[in-house]
Amino acid sequence: MNKKTSYAFRILAGAYLVYIGYSLIKKTLADGQASVGFLVSGVLFAALGLCCCVTGLLASYRSDRKSREEEQEKSLEEQTIEENKEKEQ
Image 1 (tube, rainbow, N blue to C red):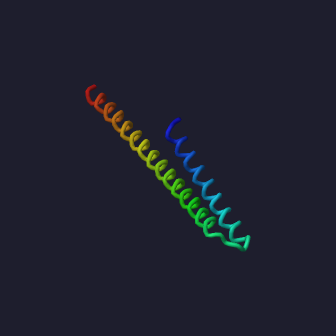
Image 2: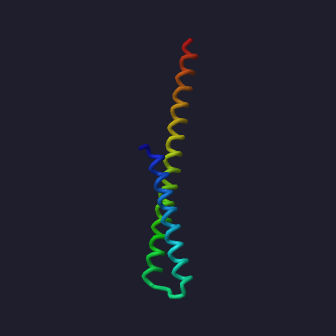
């Protein structure tokens, strides 16, 4: 599995945890008997999911930026080699 797929799964898992946390909090508050344990669990699920989403997005962004920089570097090297060949002729 490549890195981009791993980041996508991390983002999806985080979004699902946020959804579960939100649903748990919403249902607990709607029942009228707000159980502290369920509220804390909902907040923890949502916070963990948000962390997963943010770290997945940041890692994906950094990976993309790094690959773009490497492509630009490679392009500059090729361009320099071509210019040197033209000068020699």
